[in-house]
Image (cartoon, rainbow, N blue to C red; front, side, top):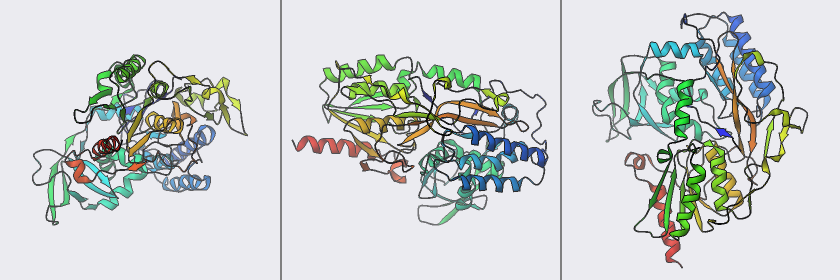
Amino acid sequence: MKLIFTVVLFNIICLNLKAQQDTTYNPNHLYQPQELRADLAFLKSVLEEAHPSLYRYTPKGTIDLKFENADKQLNKPLTDKEFWKVAAPCVAAIRSGHTALYLSSAYVSWQNKNPITVLPLSVYLMNDKVYAAGFPSKTKNLYRGAEILSIDGHPVKEILSTIKPMVAPEGNSDQFVDFMLEARMFSYLYGDFFGSRPQYAVAYLDSTGKKQEVLVDGVKSGAMVSIEHSKEMLEQEWNELDKSVKIEYFDSLPGTVSLKIKGLTYYNYYKSFDAGFFELMQKDKIKNIIIDLRGNGGGYLGIGTDMMRYLINGSVEPMREVTATEKENSFGKYVIKEGSDFSKAFLLKSGKREYSIYNVNHPIYAYPEYHYGNNVYVLIDKGTFSAASLFVANLKSQRKIKILGEETGGGEAGTDAYGFTIVQLPTTHLLLRLPNFWGATTTKHKNTGHGVMPDIEIKPTITDRVNKNDVVMKETLKLIMTKNNSK
């Protein structure tokens, strides 16, 4: 199954395969209310016609109200970026982590030539509080792990309530939102809504609990990556096995191996890697494999499926079902990239407006020669998303494993993906990334809208993260050691 699930960091990738490059782009151009309302209505109609999970997690009435309230805000001329701020929360409200609204290709091209000053502050998020994770070394007194109280006088509560609605969560969990804000988006979205300036006043609590304030110098924003370069980067990752996986043995715990998989992206090597890895596990008589998927944003589902063939006896089910809401669309002339990995010609009608591919769950037989039937421990967190979370969900439902860490960012029941159609709005040229299908995992659990839940929940504290104290791995090794000693 050549199903590519890609996490594209918000506001980084410019999706411009066929989009017109406007060399006269003016970021201050004002679109009239009637133009903006027409684009908003078009956006809603595309979602209603083709999104595979439009009302899966958010009721129709709520979505309709979101668009109605957005429409009311379009009562004056706005720039395309101002319109994006109004429209993007409507898309995020669907709670489909693979669905997003981007600024136009022309905007990205312009910003690359005219970089803005951004706040160089990366953060940790926990319990709706923000903590400093990274900042320029010359910033005096501020320290990693310090609780941030406000920026330029804006309280953290105000900042989060403003920027969080711009990020699409996955289902009923905000795990993926926090991951995306921590990864990069916090500082960029802060600038989008609260302004860009040479210096930012950051108020924080010092080690004694007193409020302090420090000035953080802004830095020029980095260049956004064009779709051509992003494609080259993806193809390069297909060959970068050494950057995708890491194998570690433990001297203090013989018979135990950790396999860290940073991304399911090593497309050109996964079959040979899996064969070699599990042959080695058999040769070294490994009793415990720790599969570390923390921070794994997904990639190629077939990599996870192939690995399951060594971990499961008999046959493997890669997915339970794949569905779509339409076979043909009415907005074809605005599609700048067709993204389906399946031919919709083979969809079977299964409901009033639903079509399904049922044969995706045909048995894929296991590799018996190097079958691994011993203990498997899987480590997860809010950065485990897309194909990585699907892999965990499928593996959990088809063999006994022990899962440690915290809830995945990706859903346990399934996800919207399987290629993405890129639709350009007629006037503002904003770009909608539209998943083509909903893919259901083989889990037997009811879809609660949450990710895969760990058997043993371990949430690193801010202090753990600052000190790089890997409590999840430590607890896993302790569990194995305790189990070994009890025999």
